[in-house]
Amino acid sequence: MPGRSRRARSAYGAIAVWVIALLVALVATIQLRSQAEVERSLQGADPATLAFSIDQLHQANDSLEVQIADLSQQQRALQSGGAPAADQVLAAEAEQLRVIEGLVPVHGPGVVVVIDAPGLTALDLQDALNSLAFGGGEAMAVNGLRFVVGVPIEQTDSGVTIAGAVVLPPWTIAAIGDPNRLAETAELMTQQLHGDRRVREASYRVAADIVIRAVVSERPFVYAVPPP
Amino acid sequence: MRSVARSQLVSSALVALVALVVGFLLAGQVKAQLLTPSNQVARNQALIRSVQDLERANEADRQRIAALRAQIASLEADAAGRSNATQTLQNQVADLRAHAGLTALHGPGVQVDLAGGPPSRDSTGQQRYLITYQDVQDVVNLLFAAGAEGISVSGRRITPLSAFSGSGNEIVIDQGPPLFAPIRIVAVGDRNRMQAALQDPSALPSLRVRQAQYDVMIKVTGSPDLSLPAYDASLEAAHARAI
Image (spheres, rainbow over the protein chains, first blue to last red):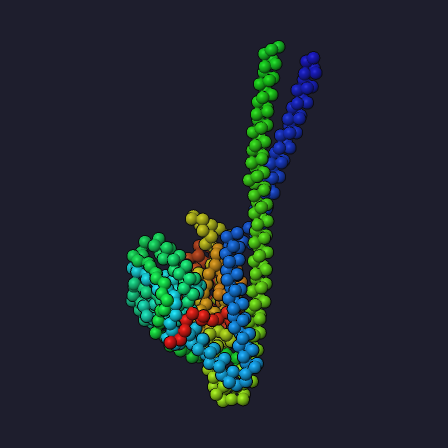
C-alpha cells in the first residue's frame, strides 16, 4: 500500500508539473503574440492619426472635385468661344488670383477673432493665422494689415511685425471664408487660448460681411525664373 | 480515516479553487492581451486601407487638375495669338500665376532637410524627437521672411493660401496627402539672406533645442539653381470677393 501511494503521488506530481509547464507556455505564447501584434499595429500610425488623415483627405478630395468642376467649365468655355471667351476666363482668373494674393481689397462672410495678451510672440500669431487658413480663411488681416502666406511675420524689439509694421495687442484678426468652418476653428482656437495664462481675452464673432481694405505690396521676382 | 478523507477533500477544494482562479486569470489575459490587439490590428488595417484609397483618389484628382491647367493655358495661348488684348491679359495672368505658385520656378536658393532623431520620450511623455507640421511651418515662415520667392515642401508648392496641419509625425499641407519626415524644403530666392537667417542661433528655437537634445536633424544646403514644381491642388477663393 505505501508503494502504491508513493507511485500515485509521484504520478500526480508529474501531471502537476506538466500542467504548470503547459500553463506557463500558454501564458508566454499569449504574451509574446500580443506584444508582436501591438508592435505591428504601431508600425504605421496610431488610430487617432489615421482617423485624422481620413477626415482631412475626405475634405481635401471634396475641394479637389470642386476645383476640377470649375477648371472643366473654364476649359469648355475656352474651347467653344475663341478670343472673347478667353478674355472672360482670363479676366475672371486674374481677379481670383489678385484676391488670393492679397493685392485687392475684399469683402465676404467670415469671423473676427480678438486676442489680447501680453507676451504673445510672432510664432503665436503665425499659429493663429495658420489655424484660420486651414479652417478655410481666404483673406485675412491683423489690426488692419493684410496677411497672406509669404508676408513676413517677425519678432522684433518693438514687438511682432507684419511686413515690417508693428502689430500691438489686442490683435483683431479678420478672416473671410466659409463662415461655418471658420467659426468651428475660431471656437477651438479661443478655447485653447483661454487655457493660456498670458491671455486676457480671446473671443470671436461670426460676421455676414467683413471688409478688408488693406492690400499686400506686389513683390516682383528678383531671383526666381518662371518658365518662358 | 475520516480526518484523512477530510484533508483530501480540503486539498481537492483548494486545487479546484486555484484552478478556477488560474482559469479566470488566463481568460482575462487572453481577452486583454490577445483579442484586443488583434481587434486593434484589424481596425488599424481597415483605417490604413481607407487612407490608401483616399490617397489614390487624391493623387488622381491632383493629376487631373494639373492636366486641366495645362490644357487651359494652351487654349489661352492659342487665343492670345489672335488678339493683342487677350495677349495682354494672358501676360498679366501668367505673372499672377507665377506669384501664386501655379507655375514651376527655378533659381538660386537653399534646401533644408529635416529628419527626426532616434525614438525617445521626454519626461512629459512627448515624442519631441519627431518632426511636426509646426517645425515645417516655422522653417517656411523664416524662409519667406528672409527673401524666399517660392517654396516647396517635399514636392508640394506653397501658395498664398497654404496652411499646415497634422497629428503626431504626420504633416498635412493644403489638400495633399500626409507627409512624413524626412522632409525637404526647397526655397528659391535670396540665397545668402536665407542661409544667414537659417544660421542665426536665435531662429527656429524649438528645432534647435531638439537638435541638441534629441538629435533632430536640420541640414541646410545652398545651391545656384533649384527647381520648384507648380502647385497641383485647389486654389480658389469661393467667399472672398474683390471690392
